[in-house]
Length: 112
Length: 112
Image (cartoon, rainbow over all chains, first blue to last red; front, side):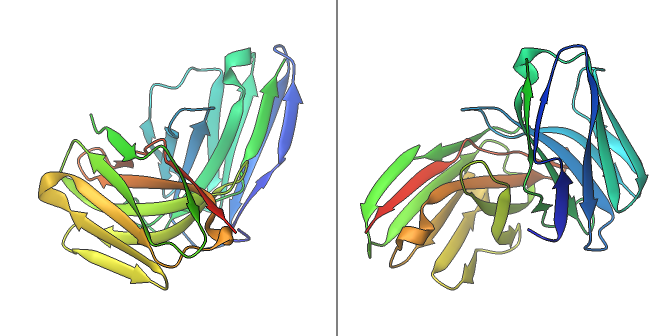
C-alpha cells in the first residue's frame, strides 16, 4: 500500500464545492490511472496517463478534470459534483500501460 | 466491449477448505489477466498476473489458471484461512483497448 498513496482518504463536499484528489506513486512507474468504484458495480476506468500524457478518457463528465504534472503525481479536480458521484476513487500505477497495476487505498468521496 | 463475469458472487466456507473462484470474459484477445483482492473500503492488492501466453501462475496457496480461447480463468485457494476473507476481483487486460476491465468480484468469507 505504501507504493501508491492517496489523499485525502475521506472527503465530504457539497455540490457547489471545488476539491482535488491527489495520488502519488513511489514505484518509478510511467502509467497512472483513475478508477471509480460505486456500490455493487465493477470498477470503472476513468482516465489513463502514460508518460504524463492522457491516453484514455472513458467518457467521463467534464466535472471531473484530471491533471498529471509528472509521472509520479496524478490529481483529480472536482467541481459541481452530483450526489451520484459519491464513490470510492482509486488511483493505480503500472510500469507501462500493459503491466500489472498497483493500487492506492482510495478516497471515499461523499457528495451532499 | 469486454465484459467480465465472476461466479459465485459470494461464498462462505469453513476454514481449511480448498476453493475455486471462477471468472469469464467475452473478448479472448487479452494481453494478460490479473487477480486482485480487496478488503472492505480499501484499495486493491495484486495477487497474480498471468500473461496471455501462460496457462497458470502460482503464489503460495494461490494458483490461477487461464484458458484464453474459452475466455475463462480460475483462482484456486488452498487450505483457506480467515485472513483470506475479502472480495476477489478478476481483471483481463484487453490489448486492443489498452485498458483493464473488472468484474464485480466474488465476496469470500472463511469461517474459523
